[in-house]
Image 1 (cartoon, rainbow, N blue to C red):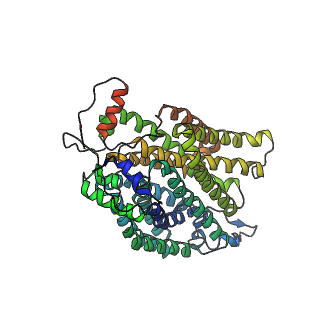
Image 2: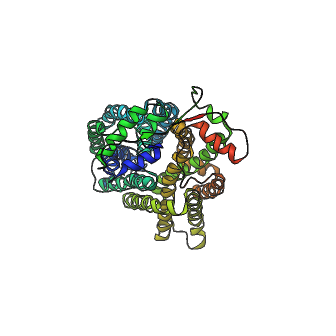
Image 3: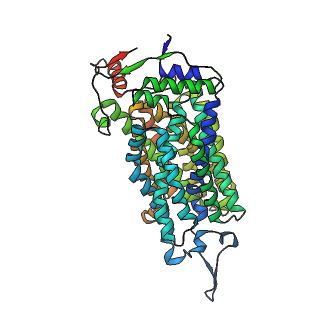
Length: 483
């Protein structure tokens, strides 16, 4: 019987990629739900000031009367509660990111997606029918948990089920859907759709995914590396092969077995030198990209008068950036793309910061919008690249835990971003200048990562560490290859 590695097996059963498309179709339902809750937050609860005349009669624009800000009268002394919503969301992500990543690596990608999709329905129902801003603030803590419990395992599941030559393509589509949904949300609010109705749409999409997730199998990579279940792995590969029109899967799987039953935890990132170096660099890059991505979201209302139109433009730029990067990341490699995206976005922010001093004092012209859109394009591209890069840098046994650490540091940056304007005003510096410096420094740091283009994904930590030690002529970690 023919024997092959798990990567070669996935390439063999890919066929017409009908199964990979099925994964995208089903998991994009939670993409829509999460994008409504996350990217729609500035529209749902905009931070606005009342326009008061000399008689102290105040009003707000008619377009904002459908917002939660109007419903709960979050003006003047209550305005600080708006910031607590974003803080609660990132606090939820930080609280759950390490545990939920461990859960996905221990019990599987499908269980994580399924369980947290089910949990998401009552959480969003509380928000849709909330009677107080405090209900929204508390519920957004759990929304933060939902993104880690659904989005990250979904992305990993898709990449682990895609052959190397198409991995970036499917991942790019997955990310571009997020940008398309962001534009869709902007249009909904531009049309004055009530914010509670948008949450009901989000609940409906989660209910659809709960029903359809049964048609998606567990990752063969996970079954082989974490459960060492060759029979179940072959069973899943056979099902995928049939769906993709390749007929039954009749080959055997080459497997790597560790001599001792090694149990990995977050301490493994300290124990193994190569892992420590990679996770240190990755966390710095994740901090930079998350800080910039969400800071743009919170800074945008202060730069542009029509938040909905600019939001739709940003979403479109994000979608296009993710799609085009699927091509360039295979031509240039992950390392070069990371460097270029960080550098160009940093230069865009630098130009935006200097633009008023060079041309005029008007912050709301088309030049700023063009630079802001270009910066968003490259930041979105880098967000996609860093997800792919992280998948390929770390072995299957600890891949989701690596995401957990990176997300943990990234969400600290997210909490900072929700208060970026306030912090920078207190410090007397421009928030755009901070983003410029951050992105340019990240471009330099990215040069210390290894290139992963064309390499098979590692299954075990010891296997990855051995490759590193062999390159540096050091004694490796003992393990056996069983065929």
